Amino acid sequence: MKNTFIILILVFKLSYLFAQDYGEIKTVKIHSKELNQDREFFIYTPRFYKEYKHQNYNVIYVFDSQTKEYFDLVHSLLPFLSKEIDNPYIVVGITSTWIDDPENPYGRNDDLLPKPKNVPQNNFYGHANRENFIKFFEKEIIPFVDNNYRTKSKRILVGHSLSASFVISTFILNPNLYNSYIAISPNLVYDKQGVSNELEKKEVEYLKSSKFIYSSYVNEDNGWISSKSARKRLNYLLKEKFPNKIDAITDSIPNKNHFTTFVPSIIKGLTSYFDFLEKLPKKTYKTTIEVKVPNEKDEVYISGNQEVLGNWKEGIVKMNKVSKFKRVITLDLQQESSVRFTRGSSEKEAIMKDYNLQYLGYIPISVSEQNNFSFEIINWTDKMKKN
Image (cartoon, rainbow, N blue to C red; front, side):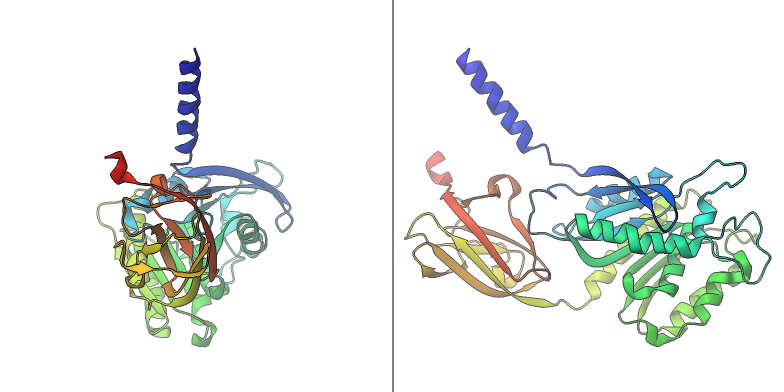
C-alpha cells in the first residue's frame, strides 16, 4: 500500500513536470471604452513560458481571428519555421464582433474600413469605424498584452483580405509602433485605391526604423479585391518611395483562391520575415551573470549559443570567483541568449533553483530588456557515477 502511494505521488509529480510542455491559449474578454463594446481576443503563450522566467517575447497580432483557424495556423506554424528556437513568440488573435441588431448591426467591415473619401459611404463601409478600431487596438489591446505578459518591442501584424488592408493602413498611420507586416490578399480597390492614396501622402522621414512588409496575391483581377493596377501602384510606392527603409516582398500564389491562399501565404510570409531578421545587424549587450554555489570550492563553467559562450562546448568559459559562494562573469551577449552551467562537462551539470536543466536543457535570457541576471545552484549531477 505504501509503495503504491509513493508511485502515485511520483506519477503526479512527473505529470506536473511535463504539464507545461505545450503552448497555452487563453480567451480574454474586456469592455472596450474606445468601441463601447464587449470584445474578445485570444492569447497564445509558447511552451515553457512559465518556466523561462528570464525570457521576453515578441508578439504577433493576427486580425480576423473570429475565423479562429487564422490564429491557430500562425501559432502552430512558428516552431517549424523559425530558425531561432530560443525566441518563440506570443500570438494574439484579434476578433471582429458581429452584433446582430436590426436597427444598428455591426461587424467586421465596420472595424476594418475607414470613411470613404472618393465614393459615397454605403453598406459595404458600414460604420466605417477604422479609426476607433485602431484606438481600441493601440490603447487597449497592446497595453493589456504588454502589462500582463513578458513582451519585447517587436510587433508583427498579420491580416487577410480586408484585415490585410487594415494591416497596411497601420503601417501608413502609425508605423513606428510596429515592425513587420504580413498582408495576405489585401483589398486594394475599395474607395478607389484608398490604401495607396493614403500611402502616397506620407513622407520618407516618418519612418524611424527599417520595416518588413510581405504581401501576397492570387488571380483576383476582377475589380473585387486587388486589381493588377492597384497592386502595381502599392508596390511602386513601397519600393520607390522608401527604398532604404522597407524590405517589401510581393508574392503571387498560384492555384489558390482568395480564401485558400492563407496557408501558403502565411508560410511564405513568416519564412521571409525570419530571413529578414537574420539580415539585420546583430547587436550585443554587456551582460553580467551571477551564480550562487553550494560549496566554497565549486568551479563553475558557463556555456551557451554564442561564441563568447563557447557555442555550447562545456569547460571552455569559466566564471570568476568573487567570494566563497559567488561566481560572476560579464560578457557581450546577443539579444537572444541561452546559457547553462556545469563543472566543466555535461556529466556534471548544475541542479538549479527555479530551473530544471535536466528537463529544460538551458536557460534563455533576454539581455536587451535586462543586463544583470542572478541564479542559484543548489547541487550538481554526477552522471558518471550513475553509469
